[in-house]
Every structure is written in structure tokens, then in C-alpha cells.
Amino acid sequence: MTKGLYIKTYGCQMNVYDSARMADLLAPLGYGDVAQPEAADLIILNTCHIREKASEKVFSELGRLRHFKEQAAADGRQMLLAVAGCVAQAEGEEIVRRAPQVDMVFGPQTYHRLPELVARATEHGERGLVDTDFPVDSKFDSLPEEHLGDEASAFLSIQEGCDKFCTFCVVPYTRGAEFSRPVTAIVAEAESLARRGVREVTLLGQNVNAYHGEGPDGRTWGLGRLLRRLAEIEGLERLRYTTSHPRDVDDELIAAHRDEPRIMPFLHLPVQSGSDRILEVMNRKHTADFYYRVVDQLRTAQPDLALSSDFIVGFPGERDEDFADTLKLVTDIGFTQAYSFKYSPRPGTPAADIAEQVPADVASERLATLQNLLNEQQMAFNRALVGRRMPILLERPGKYEGQLIGRSPYMTSVVVEAPSRLIGQLVDADIHEAHANSLSGSVVTREPGDGMSPAAASGEAESETRATA
Ligand code: 5AD
Ligand code: SF4
Image (cartoon, rainbow, N blue to C red):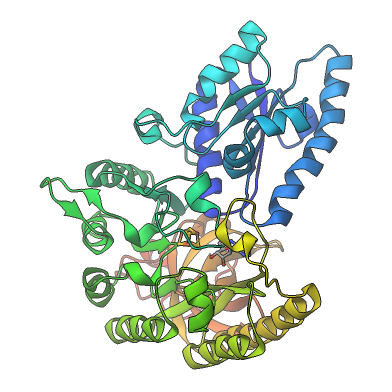
């Protein structure tokens, strides 16, 4: 008998990956996705603790779900409610105290035990189960092969946790110490993805370029070496990785960007602030100048590299001149996209205890100023792509009939008119128009015999045409 599973995911790509793996773990127990929480037998909230707003959302959602659970009980149906992810890790028992309707709480390092927890709840009627260990054995050894649909692009988790301890950040506490999966396990997973039609893999880790996994030669491999190995896998046309720390960009990684065309020319490299004084208090372990130098080296290696970043404004003690340094860094470097946030004090982190907090209205004003600048840069970058021809990986249907959405090498979404059978294909597209968050273009049909486009493979048109359904 199939049972309904509803997973709601908050936060980062790591959580998206973890949620998919939870579904994989539960499939053999008869759980299949349902579209609405009301229809579910098991609801999992995979949560994020990074900022206060993200955390609080969980408790308001739990309030809403309590009604569904009560309704299910009134209908004589058992509905289980689980909280997973970083709020689960940080709050543990407290969640069950605050929200007694929650049956299970488990962290990012223990979700491989989910089948056991579900069995305890369904077969033995146990409630309020909390599992927030940091087990010695890696959960990766107990995860089944991932289920795939027709995805052209997939995430692959290679590293977890963080040893950097930036003073604003909960990650080292919720995700634990750095851990890198061995190279052979990663290569096997990537080969399996490629065999099943995946063209692009994004390697994931909280601090992915701190990767230092055991290689098949018994030595420790860094990310640069791992990327080169993955680039040898047939069918994997595109490699990406996220999220990186400037301190962990080493020569090997820079050289991989130089030599390996499958490493896409886009890098998310958070800097957080342009002020050395603030970077110091943030314990970022780098200066603004260090960031400039790393970017210079990367751009020398891969000249069309597009950069993205994260910024925090209103960090305790941030003065006007510190914020001006951030604006200067943004102007100097030029980002193609970026995420910016108002500082949010997180309990248990050192920065939350700094007395000199920035008033909320000042932080809001700075955020608006920074976001304007970043939006202008993004728009300018998108406009500069108009008239260019570039490879697009077609990923999913667009908003309107006959449209598909793909990604440029620089991560920009590109809307084209194309038949849905092209989903999963890498095609060339001419870019015609730039918008704030996307581009529009048309698919180029290549010369017959070049083996790239399906139109060419079937001996169709030779010159440029707009592909239609
Ligand atoms: N307040 C605001 N932003 C934060 N981030 C992490 N912790 C906080 C916090 N306490 C931001 C950083 C990080 C991104 C994932 O979230 O910019 O890079
Ligand atoms: Fe958090 Fe990133 Fe700093 Fe690690 S490097 S503590 S994950 S902000």
C-alpha cells in the first residue's frame, strides 16, 4: 500500500539534496510524494536555521500543520509530523516541548536512520522521538542510490560541515565539523548520474572547496583534483560547485579552472563585507585585498568567469565607512548576481553577544543601497550577453506552452521556444533579450553531422532556425 509523503524544504541546496535523499530512503517503505500536506501520512519539514526569519517560519508552519493532523485523526487516519534539518539540530527537544504535535526530530547527520524512526512511530506508537547525534559513521554509506526523473542537472553532496566559525554563522554548530566523502564514492555516484542522462553536476558542501577527501591512491585530494577526475566521466558536460570560501581557493583549483572547460565559468564566492575591520570581527580569516587577489587569479585562469557572492549588512559595529568599503568592493569586482542579507543575531554565535548592534532602519537602508547596486550589475551583465551565442542546458518547461528554460554557462536562466523533447539537451542559443533575472533567446540548429543537436542528428534543417514544438 502506498503512503503519502510531503516534504517541505527550506534554505540551501544542501537541504534540497537531503530532502531528495529522504524521499529515496522512504520509497522502499511504500512512501510516495503527494502534492498537498492534507493528503500525507508523513510530513517532513526540512528546516533552515541560518537567519531568524527562516527559523521562525518553521514554528508558524507547525501551527498550520497541527490542524491537518487533528483533521486526519478525526478521520481515523494517522499523520506523522517530522522536523528535520538545521532547526531540528539546533533546537532538538525544545521543538517537541514547543510543538507537541511533532512526532520526530532529526538532524542533517542522522536522516539515514529515518526508516527506523518511522517504524518506531508507526509500529510501536512511539512519539516525540529526537535524534540529533553526530554519528561517527557517515550517513552517506547508508543512503540508497538516488532516484532520478528526467533531470539534466543534479546535485552531488561531497562535503559537509564547516570549521571556519565565522562569528555570525550557525553552520559549524548545526552541520558539525568538516567532513569530505572519499573520491571513489563520489566518482561512482557521478558515473551513475551520467549513465542515467545527467549532463551537469553541482558538487555541494557548506564549504565545498575545503574538500580534502581520500583519493584512490591513498592520498588526500583537494577539490581541483577531484574536478579533473570528474571531468573525465563521459556525458558529464558541465561541472559546478558551491559554496566556496576565499581562503580555500588553492592553486590546484585555479589551475583546474584554467585547464578544464567542463568547469563552468561561474563561481559563488561569498565575501560578506568589503571592510577589513568588519571581516576581522566576522572571523572571516581574509581581508578585502585577499579577496581581490583570489578573484584576479581566478579571472586570469578563466577570463570569462562570472562571480556571485553573499553579503551581510548591519553586522554589529558596521559604520558608514565600513559599508562604503563594501560598496567599493562590489563596484571594483562586478558581480553577475548576489545574495544580500541584514545581519540576524543567532543564539549561541559570538556575534550575537556584541553590544554595538546596528539600528534596524540603518541596516534596512544599507541593504536597499547595496541591492540596487547589485541589481544594476546583474542587469548590465545580462545586457552584455545580448547578441552572443552560447550553449544552454535545457532543463524544464517554461511558463508558456512551447517554451523551455535552460541555463547559460553563467547560471542565467534562458527562455527559448523549443519542443519539450529537447529537455535534457545541451543546445546552442542566440541571446536576443535581457531581463532582470533571465534572458530570452532562440535555439540554433547546427550543421548536420556535428552530433550535437537532435535536429542535426535526424538530418533536419541546417541553418539557424527558431525551434518550435
Ligand atoms: N545573519 C545574516 N546573514 C547570515 N548568513 C549567515 N549567517 C547569517 C546571519 N546570522 C548569510 C551569509 C552566508 C549565507 C548563506 O547566509 O551571507 O554566506
Ligand atoms: Fe558559516 Fe560559511 Fe563561515 Fe562556515 S565559512 S562559518 S558556513 S559563513
